[in-house]
Image (cartoon, rainbow, N blue to C red):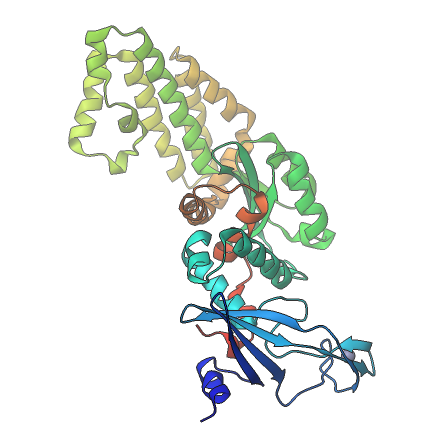
Length: 413
Ligand SMILES: [Zn+2]
């Protein structure tokens, strides 16, 4: 069997063939290739046309490395005269018209990046991490370009930090399909407006029936202005988080006041106070109940927090409303300032919180997605640019299955 045929079998050439091979210095394998049967098709419509000229410069495409050798495809594309598109470059079966790497390389790169850090993937592909980041960005941008959002009914908006808590990105979710639709830089009104203005038509905005977000004015404002038919639901997770924050404030204030002996009793309370009653052990409950004698203020704050858990279980709005009103009065009488502040927040977003009882909608799906996003983020120990962060989110939790867009015969490793 001729060497080129062996290599051809090894690299699974399909639709094109190798004509020459050369091992170069620096562990490079240069393979001169040419389109096999369909030599001169238009790259846009696939129709055959007359060859006008062969480009003088030889282009090269990166393929997956084999046995430590970096593999390059070499070919000088020809220009053809297409009846519809005029003078265009011929279609190349191994790569996208403007790509500098083969489909197979792109597929492997995408799959690696889904599974591991870009740094680890770059090591396996024998390139530098920054090159991989560039290649990944171009590839994802190309595949996602022209993609339209479809059938969006329930929208979720949340923010996430991507660089050690300094920089924020806004994520927009489709809560029915539990995918990330969009990643934007920043967390303000301007960012979220960009999403609504550029990606959704007026009709699509009217089709949205519910929107879920945290208590930030930017997101609430955006949902109410852009989606006229959407019920605004404040995310349960964020409300509970705010309440836990208030309880913790009470604890901290008591801690500051306490002397050395009292502090002993307050140790290890922080995470205990956060716990939901269903995940608490009997011992934990006993410790918390002992606070009744130890520290009245923390005890009261904890009791109020525990009682609030009942709110989420109501089925009827009137019952939930009655409970909430009673609870708010109890807090106002408690003389616990952070808790009162929380009640003030509840009062401001009263309707948004009660809508939960009617719809049962939360960003919980989104929180699940957020976990995926956080894994990606922590794995890479943060991202320097929002683009790199967005690429990884689109790849792991996005609404487009990106590797599936590579032609099937090149989806091999
Ligand atoms: Zn054409």
